Image 1 (tube, helix red, strand yellow):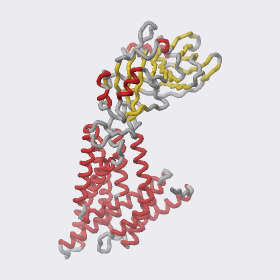
Image 2 (cartoon, rainbow, N blue to C red; image 1 turned 90 degrees about the vertical axis):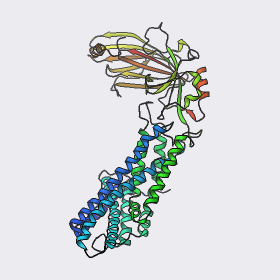
Image 3 (cartoon, rainbow, N blue to C red; image 1 turned 135 degrees about the vertical axis):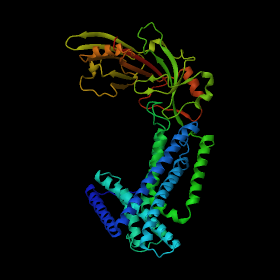
Length: 528
């Protein structure tokens, strides 16, 4: 492992110099080639665009298909090498197809030029020269691709612009050394294999490791992609990974693909990529290759929820149930095969607000959920004082009972400011507060001697009552003023039973915003 460090000033000078020389060489070449050279240049650039479009389209198509044929929408998590067959193969196939279309268009135009420029050549010789000329134009189009990326990176001062510099300079130097000229004045010759080997050795060595690590990071990030379970479509992570791999294929294979059209390897390569894709799809759809393993597990949260939201009368019994959800995209159908006797129901019709995030898809069961907790542990949101002078002020007592880890959301569309006190000590003073989607969220985590009673002082907007009344008139649910979740690190009997029955490739996982295995929910409406 090594690192080369140089200043931004030196980088800018170096990049500007290479960009200027590249533009100068291309301008000179096009002026020497005249109108036919300009059209050939345009068609070669079109082949690059077609290559990108076709490669990304095929990869995205596979990304959309995977959730339809697999138990899990991301079946490559446990075996990341499947990414090569699932996304690399269609990306390479699409890139070849797109560039082949551009290759055919370029040959069609060159036939018209050659028939006028050299009318005495035999048809076989002329066709051979046309193919050689088209091959060179496709190879040189790779320079344009990296020149544009170098210019963009240099303009925005992107630190990784050095990659574009290496991929432009090294193949261009090899082409100039081995192929002698960029001018179409001489009869075209077949590109030497040594040109691509010499030109790509340094770029591949300098960037291959970065690409492999980036793919690993993306795959690992998909495991925890869905912050609000059920909010992100199942195909979302696949599309991101597939498009990234397609970009890598188009960028790194652009020089090699120009050789394939005349090498006779086009047919075998198409068969190989199709076979690799078919085998990979068969492996993930049949479950021969598992999506998750005990070492690379699916993160699943099992939470015993005691919910008093909407029950503002102390005499009303809170609802209690087990909630099952995962931040990894996909349904929980396979996980529930071992939990059939626990009477779980799954779907999107029971949105669960955990204050710091929302479960939009999950499973829930009320079986045996009344044991393992007591009503004395239910948190309290009690209005102690509500006065209106110049500004409406409300004092709320927050009693988290046995919990020393809690999250509180305050409706900032109704509340202008607030403060929190513990006895006579001010924990959060009055001042400017942030807001996300209309809520200011506070997370608290203390030790065993942490306080559990807090005084919340709320300062309302002048028209807060008026806005709430308008909401009620529209027939919607009454708006909430406060949302509270308290966490208790305790495994209730039903939670222990569910955890024991989960497959071995499921692992409990908790972020800093995730609830513990026992969570109490409470809320205070605007019209308390």
